[in-house]
Image (cartoon, rainbow over all chains, first blue to last red; front, side, top):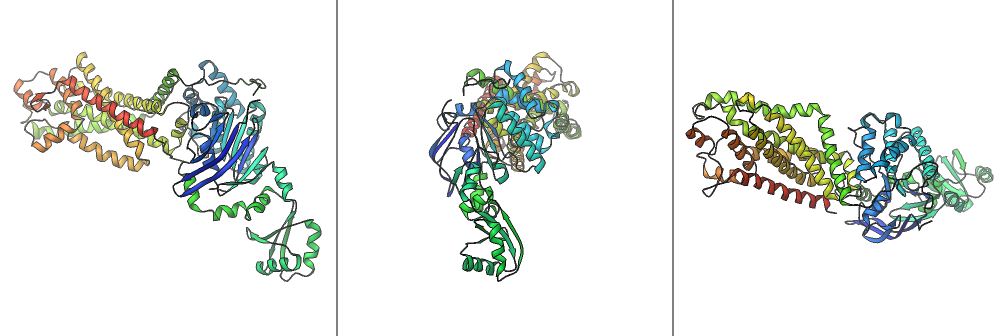
Length: 329
Length: 287
């Protein structure tokens, strides 16, 4: 085995006044599926763009597949596959043409192209549609084609930036089964970003990123175990009264998240009956659950990922999307 | 990674960058422009419409006004070299707009993250656009018979050569604009603003005889002049017209009294094209 697939040290990226990434350190082992989880504008895409050599870091360094992203840009590019949030296919050309174009741009050995092209198209179930123009494809098919294209030149690291964004739930899960299959078939390192909590569960390890910093990094299981307690969400007549009562009667710190009074407590199911005994405001509904990644995110940031997105400074998002589409290179 | 082949999947190895891989990149970017052009018949037809209107509608209508001034020469024949350049002008600029489309639809990114030089992408784009514009120009050359210009091989070849050089220069010019202008609307508006003066100042529609000084100066600055002028000279070489008429309709470009030979004119266009291509490459390579 060689060294780590990705290693990042003290990475900082500033867009003018806006600091999109504020000092990130991480290491991804070869063969690992690594997830970058956080709300929009948290710095996920900026980090991926640095790792893909699309933008230069303001400070710090990063190696991908053993090559430095600034000084060995071409070597990095030859060894990575990319699937962006926005499609980068030529819709006027056929699926096959798009892949042939990619093979030529990447200088693949001519004799190897046809064979490899069939393999990747088979893998994503698009071999039968190879002669169709991409403009006739659905969103899910386009994404699958992009994944196939990203794999065409046998990269060692595949970057997936929000691979399922904008797709319906059914298509999302089918994309995931393709990704899962390819992990086993290609033994490739996958570095992906997502802001869907449930998708992060597919990863071997995840880094939770918020406001340009990694706030937690571990396996999904370990992260959930780390917060231990059950989560209780309840709808009440008067939120303020309920929060005050929880504090005074039980010493529990509750917050409002996504419209519900939310708190963590040991053995939630035993706690609920005690709660009903003498509560000063009407309780309309109560929900007790084992911790999810959403709760992990909440316990580290004090907000849910959805609330974070609505509150997230638009500035940061603007900074991160400057290069999302139409970035001049 | 120790295993190279896993469960029957052949891994390919992308070799390091070389001159050959750069050439392949240039070729595929060039090819893509051609594939897209030839699959778009509507575009081929509409690009022909404008020059045909100028040549046959305007040329026929105005000939009543101009018959005294052309010394018996059909106005359409006079306009023909100008229209040959105009076709190339519009097509080349439109071709360069594909960069703006590619950026808008994301495909530019696929090209820019490939392990090849930016210059290869830009050169491929430029050659692709130039080929498309030249092809459109060839369709206009084919119409020579309709305006009384003979299909002499030397004429066709010389005009074809000039069109290649002109297409190249104009596509490079379009790429320089496309590097800066990100939106299609802005690109179209800006190029319209630049294309019309280029066309009108270039003597495509009138002879250079007896022009006021300001127009003569602007005409000499307009790069299109150095393509229209030799084309007209070549076409007139193959026509049977009186020397006096020719002197009036085709006096040739002079620099301070010196008659600039057609070959020098072509070189001016080529040199400008190379310069613009250099600027375009620098623009796209900026981080």
